[in-house]
Image 1 (tube, rainbow, N blue to C red):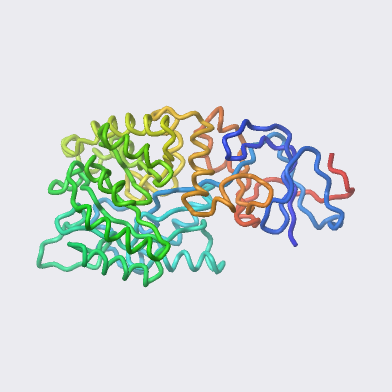
Image 2 (image 1 turned 60 degrees about the horizontal axis):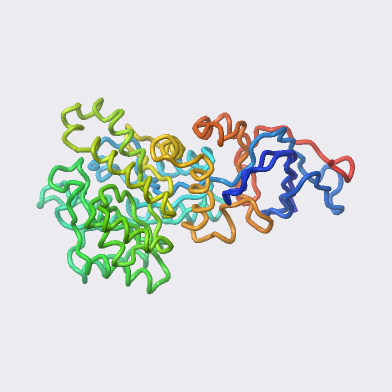
Length: 427
């Protein structure tokens, strides 16, 4: 059994408790088996049979979770680019994106939709050890209404792209059933619009309560969950009333819907996708022109989003990072920007931002008893950072600072020296 002893680290355990200095963490196989100061090497390990890694005050913490993942989006400029990209190239990009994600310290992720069955195939290949990537909850194509923001092709053109169009309760039920049949862990519904598409803007609500509730009933009957794109206040209200599990964006909620979300805070996760808005405002004009970006209303939308995420966070709602990465101006690899936005724009403390990506990450993955915190008995999904993220939340954005990445007790990255035990005490 492979064992590793991390010595004298600065422990941020993911629970929100105060950090601890000079802490040792023992990993045996794929589990954390001891945490404390001056741990002794278990007697069964002979010299050379356990890795000793001196952290010298570096931060040791849980791996991060990206809660709004699109592995099959790659350098897209328009949604049509996703639709028309050959599925073979989409698969290659998704494999590379999975590797990029875990190399950025994200040891788990929740998909927010994919092309075809690519997510499902990627998840299964990761689980079999055939490719490198994070723990993954796989999604299928987005379920969307006719006339939605992903309905971009003329009516006489049929495209097997990122969406499946389903109108009415029966069609939604049939589509959701088909996605679960193919192996999806959850399904995604586009309940509101998105203002990059002029005919279906942010403030529009595109699905009815009955349609959303039909999806939820089908998912929950199978022990599965529903993930929604919902920006408008009415769309979020429908999601809460229908029992949706994961709501992305929730930018424009009014006071009534805010109170509804807070009242049901133990039933829902909110994933605002902030970096999509920030990056579009920063770089979108390079691709579309400033006039087009101004027309989206994203500047106002970001202000609403920050106001609402601040008050949701303060009310104890679980707000998680996940930034809609995969477009040219919002590329894969920048995942940790959302943590910076949580601190600098939303107003979270650095510790709470870390909790959102670790403890809440374990919860949204439905693995709270196994991942998300550094505790005895948990799986060894561990990140060692050369720096203190409580002082500089941006440190996660520098991949050279991620010195050790461990998933399930196995090295993904190790840039630190490994020595070996020559005596029992490692005090």
